[in-house]
Length: 350
Image (cartoon, rainbow, N blue to C red; front, side, top):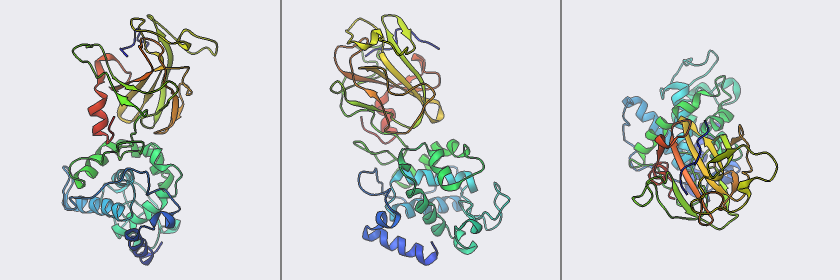
């Protein structure tokens, strides 16, 4: 409720069986879970699209990746992870020889290796087979949807360059959106969106971003009962945990602090709050927690992970989450943006 008072800086036949099984709704049992109920799914409505910046050959390969994902009933988040992985490994080119990023027996869109059990060279250089094998292994990763994209991709690929996938996330989301009608599927409740985001708290959005009545309101208020769990809106690293009231700001001490009690309008400050730094230097901020956040600075979190509980500390008239999004790190009032359209672009409705 208001800005911070103080700013402190299988074989081909096996694949056919899986694709056939998908239409019968049995893929989750084949893969041992990971897809299906409760996930944010999507539909390929423009399989012949040519996303901006891709050649016709690259576009055909990207289309295969997303359509195989749809047929296997993989949540749309998986499509983005798969496309980002193929962008890194092969630039969406189906290499029938040693690829640019590996000097071993790596082949195809995902630079899969026959010597590592991915299949024969003929199978691996079949884009449908390669995509199916990628999804098979992705769905076997516990909690893959909630992981940062680079971690999910690395658990499948075991790459020598594990951090390289992250830089392709935004581009991969744009490519997937081209095949789903221009936008990513929207998730209306708890599921993780195709972009890897989710609602931070179950509640009703109230006071909006920088309204005429409150031009200094740098976020949106989500009304929820005291004690409601607040979750990380996306995977990232916690970069700040502080108590901030009445023109003062403190690091947690482990002892009772001024933010441990309810605040009131005019007091000033975010009360107990946390900030998370996400891919592309996006920062999310969560204010007015009832007590010290349950995460610590430097901790890596996954999308949907509990980070604290709704309260009314600081400049607050009642229990709610004041939620901010900043397009830049560190977060300042100059890079704050309206969370509602931002989250909508990420496939989440607040």
